[in-house]
Amino acid sequence: MSQSENRAVQARKLENFCLEVLMASGVPHQEAEIVSHSLVATDLRGVLSHGVISLPRYVSLIHSGAARAEAKIEIVRETGPMSVWDGCGSLGQVMGVWAMDKCLEKARENTIGIVGVKKSNHIGACASQVLQKPSETNLTFCKPALFCRRSM
Image 1 (cartoon, rainbow, N blue to C red):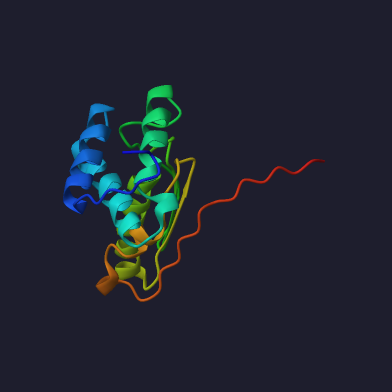
Image 2 (tube, one colour):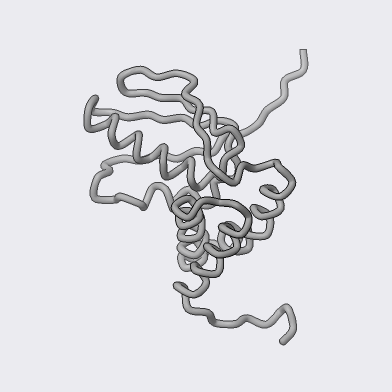
């Protein structure tokens, strides 16, 4: 089969493959599940540019040390409804899911919840985080940071 041919693969099998590859790269099981599910769910939504095609890049980032295999959070600032985290180079999907969980917790306590994550790796398709708990969210906004350089 040439590289240009498509092959149908069961989503669960593809997710398991991604899980195994990530775990072989040192990603803990629970975090590898988050990333694997995000990649396959993204492909199933038709956003092929941010799905499983990203797996080799993530593995390369981990092996080069540019991404952490095991997620780490450093809290930069914390107030009632808001938190800012340093993702310390962690995989973006993991940071996105954890940030969404924290955001929902803060919203339950304060009516609104805002969590910002900086210095994590590629978050993938943001819809994966936004769609994780739709029954608990009224309005969700996920915006990856843009890096700008200003000359003086």
